[in-house]
Image 1 (cartoon, rainbow, N blue to C red):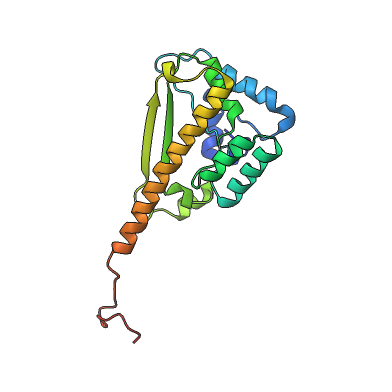
Image 2 (tube, helix red, strand yellow):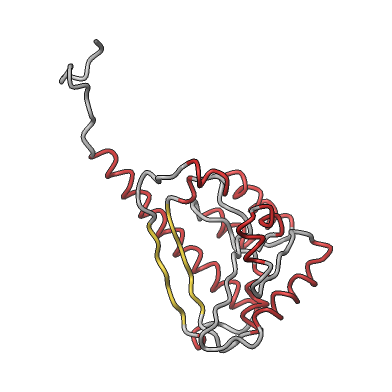
Length: 198
């Protein structure tokens, strides 16, 4: 988890008592954090789960633009083009996912997607936005370890293909919500059934 999440007492108390690593987006210590991710993923049992948030940030259009620019600056032009086609998700940060998969080669991978929570900009806003205006929609895909590519290039393409699938799923849910909102009858003032100005 990101180190700054420790400012939230729940994450601080639970995260520092369970097998966990708090990491920072710090290129100078990248290899150390990748090693810590690999160590945490090593030796998983049948009842264990390793949870990773490969985007590294909550989605906003601004962060999406910065992430795509970062890919371009790093010379990852193919990945930047793929990321530009995805409107609802940030491109995955590949190092952590690759380290975890390499450390747990027999583990299946589960991808999780959700809608609605992207409209809540921060943890602090969760409490002020309760009750939520509509249910959270979620979808999970489980991929057998035998279907996961083992080479670096294959894994990059595979991860971006899954992010594209997640992006399409979110886009479909958002379109459905927008359609339902347009179809919902507009409530008018009881004293003025025409809905005009008093």
